[in-house]
Image 1: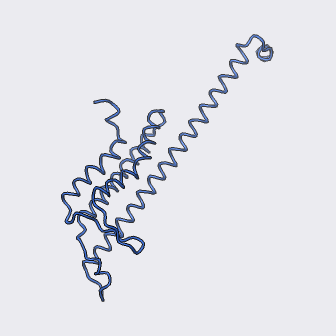
Image 2: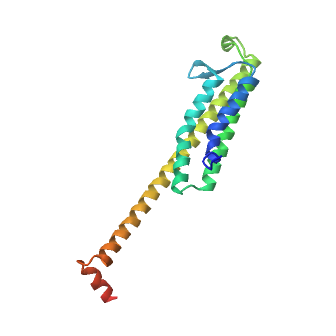
Image 3: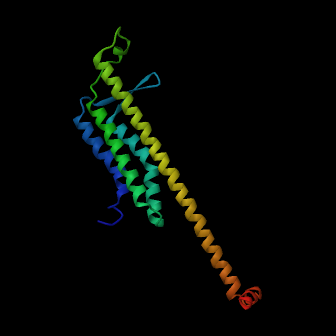
Length: 183
C-alpha cells in the first residue's frame, strides 16, 4: 500500500460508506423519514451516504492540499477527522434505530408516544447534521486561512530572495556596494 492510501483524511469517505452499509442492513426500515420545513422526505441509506460524502468532499480535498504543502496541523486535522466521523456515525446510528412511523400520526388528537420518540430522533439527527456542516465550514475557513498565510510567507521569501540577488549579485547595481561599504 502506498503512503497516500494510509492517511487520516481517508476516514472522511470510508466511515460514511462503511457505517452507511452497516446501517442499511441493520435498520428497522429500508428508508429514513426526515421531517424538515413542514415536509417529509424519504431517504434511503445510499442517499444518506451520498449526502454525507458530498458534505465531506471539499474538507477531504483541503486535508490533501494542506498535507501536500506541508502546512497540516496534526491536532486540527485529527480533531476534524475524529469529530466528523463521530457525527456521521451518530447520525447513521440514529436512523438505524429510529422505528418507522406513519406520517398521519402527526395529525392525531393527543400525542402518540411512538411519534413523539421519532420526532425527538428526527430533531436530534437534524441538529447533529447541522453541527457536522458547521464543523466542515469551520475547517474550510481554517484551511483557507492557512493557505493564505502560506502564500503570503512564500511571496515574502521570494521578494527577499529577489532583493538579495539585486543587491549583491547584479554587477550594474551600485546601491548594494554602497550599503556594504557603509556597514
